[in-house]
Image 1 (tube, rainbow, N blue to C red):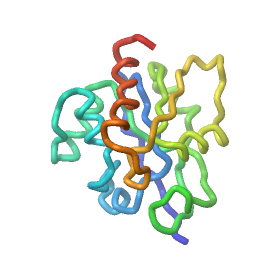
Image 2: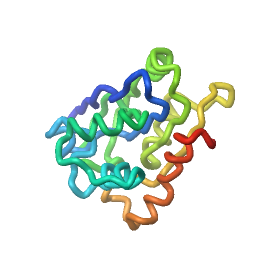
Image 3: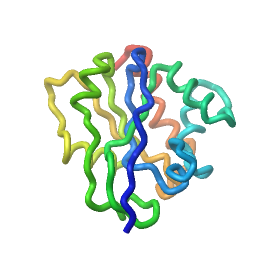
Length: 167
């Protein structure tokens, strides 16, 4: 079993929404890019929310998402896993959310890209009704989560609602 380390957060001072995955898949780790698997619908969903076409350049995709006040990170800092499936994750250690939220106090909405991210966050960090965050678990953008694109996009459209200020 291989020990894996996640990426640093993609975030800036204007970020209002934090999208959390569990741990990057093997293709993402190999390319050192969030959501690098061409079958993962993440970038297609994010761009579709803003009626745009995904840029082939990873750097431009990152600039795009940050320009929309959206940040990316993973719940898990490091773990052991064979393959890319979340169900194979073992020995997970969480990222440091206390310091992230302290450094970026304008984050108000936390979106979970799938059940594993949600469950890991709940187990390691927990939810607090007084912390001021709005938490939302969305269907995973992973190809392993077989749901039609349009159905995923409909649920992910809550991001636009959050950005418009209508919680």
